[in-house]
Length: 289
Image (cartoon, rainbow, N blue to C red; front, side):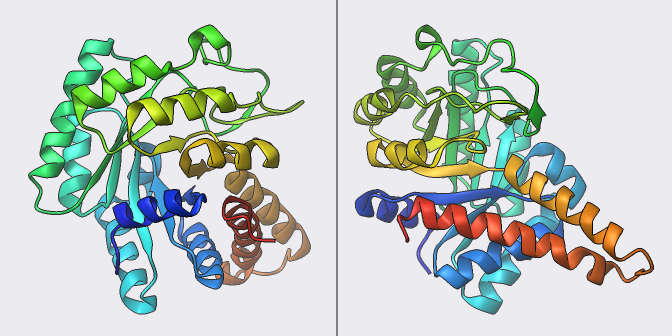
């Protein structure tokens, strides 16, 4: 099986994007993997620090290995938004395929130094572990929001610049970069999420020389998604949409099956709901009609 690095390079060549979907339970994992398997597409499973605490670091790694072995499926595991170097080292040691060091709350100098240390550790691991970094503030909460969080870089003057991206990549050696290009984590309860700065995406990709990742994909318009892919985005993160699908399906299942006590019967609708969301997003990211 090809590596995640190979699949990302292939996505860039084809002008498509790999879907990255966060999970925090077995139902979501089954749904994401089944959707990707049906479409014969690679997929990345993300687990944030909170999700890893709930699922278990080694348990998550074991589940992904099991899927690869049973189905020969190109499914990969990413440690989403990891805020310490020690946390990065822990997931690399556990067998994760990729890790994101999120140092946006640090000074630029501290962020560069910490990211560089993460890259060094990954290179010394003996495995092909991809290290991603985030540059610019796009918020941190994958939930329903009443307003755009303070400090989120949706204004032009706060976006990641091509010069910043180039300098950061050269100094750290990261494999992937997640810039602030008008995107944000979470979904607004009223109205649409901000439009992406498509031209800025193209400028950053050209300047920095590494594939780009779009965080905070939930709530983004289909047109923006596809324009962003054409401009240089090769991986897209979806989380809030999955959480909404899960909760709504679970509420409906409990309401319609008040006497049911078998968890697997109660939870099956949540698998179906998440799978539908994932299939639709994967088709969109791969320009499948």
